[in-house]
Image 1 (cartoon, rainbow, N blue to C red):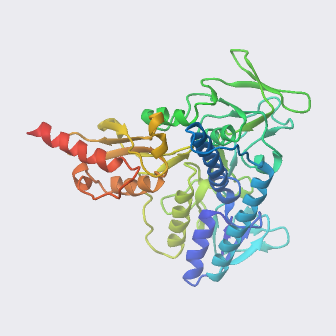
Image 2: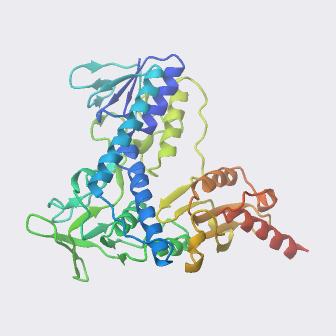
Image 3: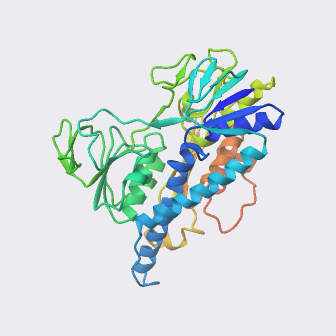
Length: 442
C-alpha cells in the first residue's frame, strides 16, 4: 500500500498515476476538498479576481473613449461567494477524477514519523510514501502582525468582508503585484512596500511594462516595515530607517511561501523546512518520496505536478524524466506578463511593442499594447529567453520555454505562420533577429 499525504497538484498527480498502474493508494487530505493551495487560496483565486478587475478596467477605458456610459462597481462579498462555489465545483470534479482512477481518499490531518503515518484515528504502515503537504505563507515577525485587519493569502478571502478604502501590501513579488492590481481596480487605494525592488526576477523590460498596469499604485521600494500600528485593528505601517508612517485600513502580507513540513518527521530538511530529495524525488528515508512545494521553491503548480509524476515513476521502478531547466512564469495584471530565461548573460536582447489584437486593440491610443522581448546568442541565434506582456501570453511562454530547452534558434521559428490578429510579438521578433543576424554575417 502507498500513502500519499496532500491532495494538491503534486499529490493528486502522483496518486492517480500510481493507482492507474494497479497500486493500492490512500490519499490523505486535511482540507477536505482536493486541489490544494493553488485552487483554494492561490493562483485560481487570483485568476477569478483578476478577471473581474480586468473587466472593470476595460469598462473604464471604454467610458473614457465615450464608447459606453454608466458606472459599474464590484460586490466583493458576492464575488467571493460565487468564486468559492466554483472552487467547490472544480474540487468535486478533481475528487471524482481521483476516485475513478482507483485512489482511496481519506479526509484527515496526518502526522508522519517515518515509516508510520498517524491520522488521528489510526496508524498506517505504508510500503511507500509520497509527501506532498505543500507550502504556507511566510509572515515575518513584525510587531502588530497579529492585529485585526492583517491578512495573508490564506486568510484574506475568508477574512476580508469588503473592499477597504486603503490597503497596504507588504512584499515585492508576483503575489504582491497581482493583489495590488486587483484591489486597485476594485477601487481601493493601494500601497506596495517592497524590501528590495518590485518583481526583481522579471526582465527589466517586463518590469517597465508591468508598472504601466500598476500606475495607480503607490510603490515604496527598498523599505522594511518596522511595525504595524493600531489599537486592536491595523491602521498603518511604520517603516524602518525612514520613519515614514503609511496609513491604511488593511494589511496583506505577500512575503512569499515556506514549505509546510512541521508534521513530517524523519526525512532530512533544509533550514526553511524544505524536504531534501534526489532527482527521483526520494528523501533520505528509503521508500519515502516528497514532491511539490514541500521540497522548496520555485513554488509553481506545473512543477509540482511534474515532481509528483516523477515520484510515482520512481516508485513504479521506472526511470523518471528529468525536470526542465527552463520554467515559464507569469504575472497576471491587466496584461499577462510571462517570461522564461536560460543563461541570459550569454545573450543579447531585442525588444519591441507587442502588436495590437484581441484584448489590446483599444489600448493603441494609450500607446500600451504590451511589450515583447527575446534573448538570443548572436553567433548562432540560439534563443536563451523571452518576455511577453500581452492579454494572453502564458501559452506562448509555455511553448517557447520548451523550445528553449530543446535548443531552438531564431532561424528555426522565423518562418512560422502565425495567427492574425494576434498579440504575440515573439515570432516577429525572432524573424527580425534572424534577418539582422544573417545580414551582419554577410
